[in-house]
Every structure is written in C-alpha cells, then in structure tokens.
Amino acid sequence: MVKEKLASFISDVLESCGEESVFLVDVREKGTSRMSRIEVLVDTDTGVSIATCMSVNRCLIDALEESEDLKSIVGDDYELTVSSPGIGEPISNVRQYIRHRGHLLRVQYMGRDDVMHEVSGRLLRAEVLGGAVPFIVLEPITKGKGKKGEHLEPVRLELSCIKRAVVEIEF
Image (cartoon, rainbow, N blue to C red; front, side, top):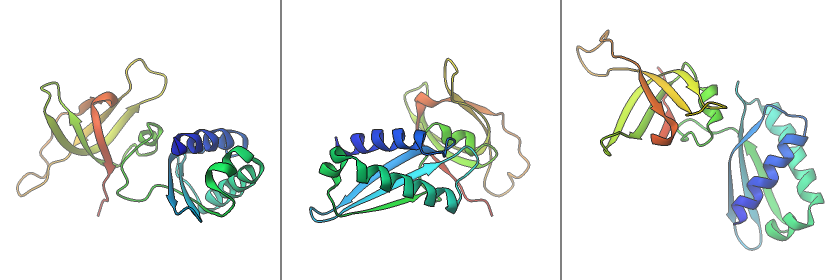
C-alpha cells in the first residue's frame, strides 16, 4: 500500500515538475522506523542524465516536504535517491522498450504451448503505446561455435506473454 501511494504521488509530481519526458520505472521503500530510504528509478525514451536525476530529486523533495499525507507515511527523517535503472535491472515499464530499441535483450516468455521460453535478440521494434495489442519484435541471436552468421527469423512477442526482459551488455 505504501509503495502504491508513493508511486502515484511521484508520477503526479513528475508530470508537473518540468521534466515532461521523464517517467517512473520503480519505487523502492526501505529503511527502519527511524529513517526511511526511498529509491526512485526514472527513465526517458532517450536515457537519463545526472542533471535530470538531480532536477527530479529536488522537485520530489519539495513536493514531499509540502505533503502532510506523504510525510505521515515516510516520516520526517528520510533519504531520497533518484537514479536510472542499472544494467541488469529487468524492464518494468513498457516505455523502457522504446528506449532500448536496437539493444540486445534476454526475454523470458510464456509460449502458446504454456511452456516458459527464453530468447536473446536485438530489439527491432516496440509497439507498446496506443496499439490494440502491445508487442515487441526481436531478431534472435545465436551463440556458440559455428553458429555465427546463422540467420533466424524475427520473433514477435506480445507484452502480456513476457515474464521478464533484461538488457544485455554488448562487448
């Protein structure tokens, strides 16, 4: 319940703080009864700069200080950090797919056969906003000896079937 209230509050603040392309990815509330620690993960369709994180942090602190309702939840003594999701963090907001077009993803999904599958591939397309059925298209990559250059057909995955998607590091 606390996380949902914080997420709703933060989303509203992000809309009004002048950083219109910034969206909420996740909120994590940790800490003790004496001091709360609130971690806010934000992103944009093109990536987040340190300056953007600092601006959002200032805006959120000002809004938290003015909200008696939220103060009763987080207390007077809290630590707030704003950052972008780190490497290896699962995608948790559909808008993140837009940002990661062209990148490698490792996706676990439930197939039509009700069996969990995994595919690694380059994200070619992300139709995640405003469409009838949100989906992504991956160009699978092959790993292992003798498989370089092997061409596999693109895979279309509806977002409702995806259980976990993580951006992979390219070397």
